[in-house]
Image (cartoon, rainbow, N blue to C red; front, top):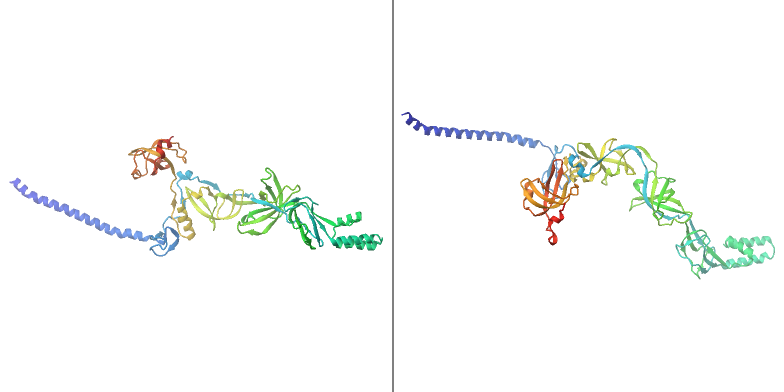
Length: 507
């Protein structure tokens, strides 16, 4: 009897249990849906709390827009720049484990004396103050021209041409006639006429001693130097004042030094100069600044500094080049950084300031003079700070787009982390394992690691898709304190003429 009652009640119990279970499931799902519904506005409100500063085109981030939309420059949507992005402007963070791979070197900002000498180049030119111009003193004829040509080196008194001057011949004949009279007054007047006719003093003396008419006048070089111009030919008819020849002396020469216009500050006449000429190796010539010429060269943006060099033996010839050191008054107690630490962008100068813990910040500075590999800092840095002296140009270009540029525009910029350097080598896949790839590779030159066979883990297993044992590959390996693993792998073309990959990757 009890058994019959239990059997009849069992289906009802099962139906009741199923109903309770289904009801509990629906109630639980309803509670979850209600919870999700109540949480969604909270999440949206948090997203809505982020303040948008402006929208920009990632390819041209210097242009800002007040509203979202499509870029007028590129076929892409504008991207919002939020106020809470990055926190610190233009800061660059570098993992300490890759600083050495980037070749970064820091240098302190020091205070001291600026060794104020300047290295420049120059060339020798004629001293145009040492010029002799030979002219016809009166009309006449060219009877003879000696074998001379422009750029000939002449000694003092070297003959140039023989001239016949009829007026001098008549004046000499009158002088001889008056001398026979013995009247000293008339004789003095005749001598004065010879001088007024233009006869040189040495020709008058020779005439008076010999008593013979000097029909020809031999024109000679009054100084030693270079014949720059010779304008006489045999048979020419000369007028009074015609130029016969121009001679440039070589007793001294000018050294014209091209000095960058930014480096001329402090240069004064009389300052000492040292010059080294390739034509005279090992010899140092001394001179002094005669003048800083007033006109600059627009093409080279330089000023000419004129230096006078004595040339008693005439060996210094115009056209020779020289390496010149100009001494300027030294400046003491100034802030100095290595010149290689300064990044000149044209509009301004920057240095990468090291803030510690792998963070670097571009700082605009105002520069002073530069000498001996050091640059004076007038504004922007303080003594004791550290700046990047080498490797600053290896900072990721993203730092410029989102850091330096944002600082210029007055907006915050996101912090940038540089990617570690990848070291490359070529090799052949021996086998593909669960935990990496067995590779026979050539040397990793940037790591100083010789070629060998070893197992490399991969950063992502999908990198090995499409590769098989025997493939020749080029790999990019990341190396840090945690080890080495492959982050890039690509196929190489088959070796030409049947060469084997093993020949290229010998340890």
